[in-house]
Image 1 (tube, helix red, strand yellow):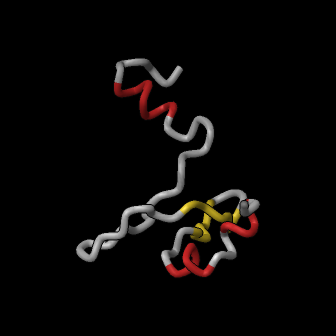
Image 2: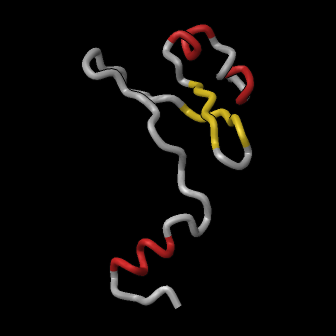
Length: 69
């Protein structure tokens, strides 16, 4: 049985690009699981990082008619 480090060093996992390095605003580059389903057109792609804690709070509260105060 593989441990976590062995899984992501496996040639098959590397060939399928199942480990991505993604740039985040605060911590910088982090590793993340790749797309498990591979499509020829359009191929899956990473677009946005996960939001930081509270990043969208004001936007969401405004949409449900809360004032900024």
